[in-house]
Image (cartoon, rainbow, N blue to C red; front, side, top):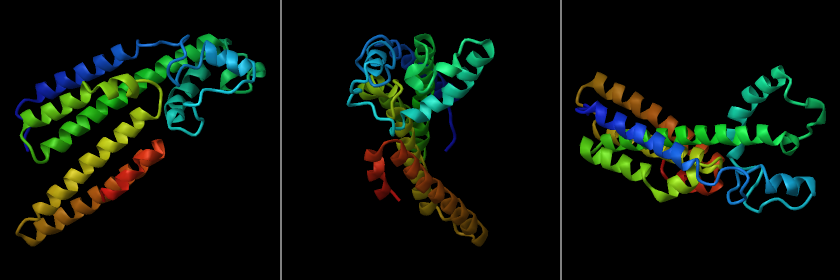
Length: 223
């Protein structure tokens, strides 16, 4: 389907990104309300060797976001001489300023991933619906209170949400290619190849979503 008003989705994605970045100011580090707050109270618990928050697990997809911002940022800090490598044995031994910046950079990346998820919802809806309905679907995701409250923090929810919307998009493409096989032999072969490629990407998306948050394993029913 042709996009009659490409500017509409552009403005919607910009709105989603700005909304996500604004949501990132809710409960900044030094508070202990969300599992991405690695400064303040969490640092004290680490120093006291007490139990960490029950909602924070090293195995979660949160490290997908941290790894994307840790290495380049820590490399810059090391070159500047601000990172005392000899005294650091883990993430909780880092200076509070570095931890705080890693958290904030991770939140920005999380907002970008969520905006990409909004775009994938739009593309999935465009496979079968007109643009106004696709824009409405994307808007509902962009303004969803669950997304704004949780997925913009550095948790496993933003990459898991991206994986779930990837599943929706590639599933829509598989269904659309299967429903429009065409009449010619060449066209049928092309559609079949597209469907096989989209199906492979669909399965990869299911694996990605489930690896970010195991509860998203129910998406395995999609293929």
